[in-house]
Amino acid sequence: MRMRSVNVDLGGRPHSYLVEVGSGLLSSCGSWARKCLKGNCRVLLVSNPTVFKQYGEEVVCSLAESGFTVETFLMSDGERFKSMKTAEAALKFMAEARLTRTDAVVALGGGVVGDLAGFVAAIYLRGIRFLQIPTTLLSMVDSSVGGKTGVNSAFGKNLIGAFHQPSGVMVDVSTLSTLPEREITAGLCEMVKHGAISGRSLLKQTGEFLASVDRRSLISDLKDQVSDGSKTRKAAINGLSDLIAENIAFKAKIVTGDERESSKNISSRSRKILNFGHTLAHALEKVTSYRYFKHGEAVGLGILFAAELSKSLALCDEKDVNLLNDVVRNVGPLPALANIDGDEVFEAFKFDKKHLSGSLQMILLKGIGKPVIVTDEHIPRATAQKVLKKLLQKWA
Ligand SMILES: NC(=O)c1ccc[n+]([C@@H]2O[C@H](COP(=O)([O-])OP(=O)(O)OC[C@H]3O[C@@H](n4cnc5c(N)ncnc54)[C@H](O)[C@@H]3O)[C@@H](O)[C@H]2O)c1
Ligand SMILES: [Zn+2]
Image (cartoon, rainbow, N blue to C red; front, side, top):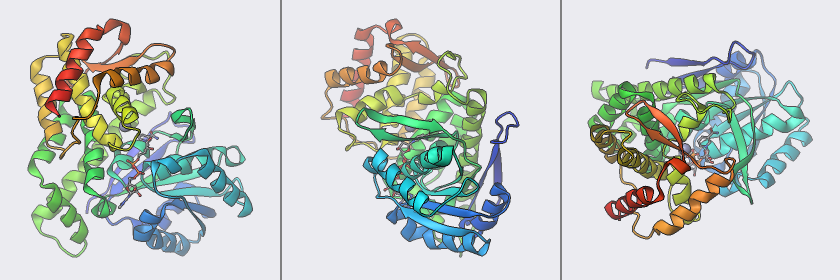
């Protein structure tokens, strides 16, 4: 199995790092961690029971074989546990284990585990190193790369956090074999988002992959890939690994250019463009109390909204919007919008607005690979309402 390596080049500063992508990598994570951390130390492995049951032992064994002393902190599974309360419990655990500034945190899990583990690593003793081993598709292509860490709070999602880059990321695609199907769909939606804002080449690669691969058989391929080796199987898994690496490379490029998401930067290469599809997604998640959609699924619908709105504002032509629709259709089933109230969605837009110096910045498209940041005063409300109404009807 080929290995891919993506460099997240943060100007040669000490926190530039590599993302390794391959399959069956977990069993050698100890030697990888030694390389990233330049020697061994004590590590705090942060995970949750769901992921730890599947992969924890392999990771702990490999780290121990490479000379690390491993402490394990398991947080409960679920977005609601990405909280200050959990962070505090993790920090207490770290203090009681007497982790020092030369020790490190290893996150093993999806974006929830990664965000929380990164956050405690950012603030414990004013910052210790951490490594990411993402195990969901979304965390592989999105949250594990870029250094945004944080927790949710009563004031909103992800409002408390820190920029803290990992010292390395290991993406083992074989961990996707146990991931529930809806989580695969959610990750694929974020990949379509990257394709839409990156350009035709990545969107085409994503579209072709989705059209050629049966998702169920891909998952079973991942399950028995170690023992088997037929050509088609390897091709599908190789295709997925290539696509994941391309997505990471694209995200790395954007992060490199705008590491801290400068509020002044409203260019087409601002880190903000990674929020394409997210204005509607956040509103859909909010009006359903974060219980109905997987975040990525809401992004899938948000992409369709942003594309259609771009067309209505004469920014983007119909051909590109149709192309995006076709790709999104192939990510898998998305939740129906039958019970969503358009007025409530508009109210929920205000929430994003409140946190963006009073104006809502939407990422729209002038075409595939041509994102543009448009503030809401340039979007007639009636046009947005009409587009939303049409989307709600189409996906009822
Ligand atoms: N930091 C960033 O830049 C960034 C970017 C995007 C999203 N996020 C955050 O990421 C989080 C969402 O991450 P997510 O979609 O990975 O969700 P998640 O971490 O909740 O994982 C989804 C579910 O899959 C389970 N799981 C994880 N890996 C598994 C595996 N290999 N096999 C079986 N089950 C597995 C988890 O236990 C969980 O139940 C959100 O909190 C979001 O805010 C952060
Ligand atoms: Zn997202």
